[in-house]
Length: 272
Image (cartoon, rainbow, N blue to C red):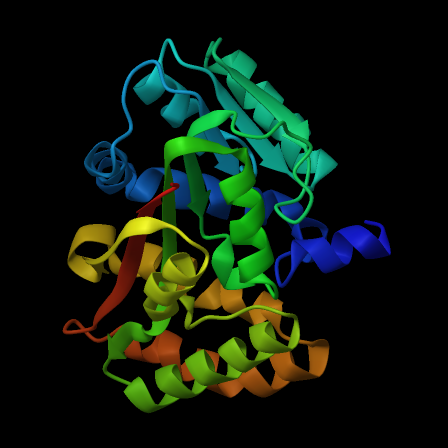
């Protein structure tokens, strides 16, 4: 990945993971585990049949295809920086026989798209990785039609919890959050979305929080999606330092009363 693309990718770089096939499986699981929640969120935000939709940081395209089904016969455009993920997305599109979706290379900081083109823009787990969220929002406003809808889905580490073994868990959450911040990310973005969207000029801004617990996800899925992969956001010395905490978290997960939760933040706003 070129230096410019590394900067634009923020704290997430697909090629930086130790095993790309495992990361692809995590992305697929992440795209399917709460799809009912996401479909309901799109509908509540105002997604309707026939709309022109932009899926930012679309990754391997699983969600883009779901958006295409929801918006059909409207067209969906998926944008991502990673050539590898875009190739996977096109394969997913062909495999699932979704006709009304296309994929293109681009960055939220430099969208290769005309002004006022989209009715609905979806940004899913993107803003936690951005060092310049206001610039991203300005570019999103540019490509939205007047009256167009922005829908942002993200997280906030203040709404992530696990017990027993909470000391090791909270320590690792703080450590990995600090590691992501050094890369330009922000694991506390969820509670900041309301102000960010309002200051960027969106109207009717609203933020809702949807808790997902281990009762819904299963303990293994929760740990895989919300906890363990975050070690990859650390430097090699940081990962070594995190090993004792990760070991305690795994041991605590063997407790029959183990329970965890993560808060999913959904922010919406309308362009004037």
